[in-house]
Length: 87
Image 1 (cartoon, one colour):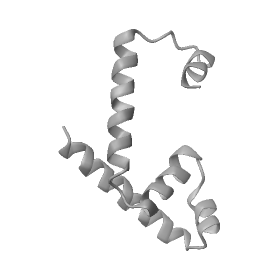
Image 2 (cartoon, helix red, strand yellow; image 1 turned 90 degrees about the horizontal axis):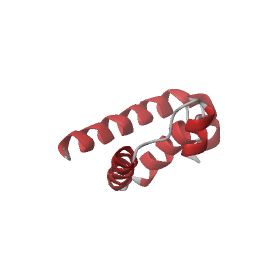
Image 3 (cartoon, helix red, strand yellow; image 1 turned 180 degrees about the vertical axis):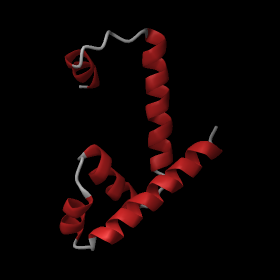
């Protein structure tokens, strides 16, 4: 699916080295995401995988949008710390 998107955007095919690095990065990210709380993973998935707005997430989870924004921010910061500590 990513390859289709890349081609649609006019990108050239990736080299084997780039594919390996992308695969390793995806694996590392998956491992780090699993270290977050289930709630944080859901919030990040809704925000970045599903591209929902804070308002849409708030409606879906029955929380104030300001709370969702704060929780997503904290989840991103936690993920960033995990990533930096893993390198």
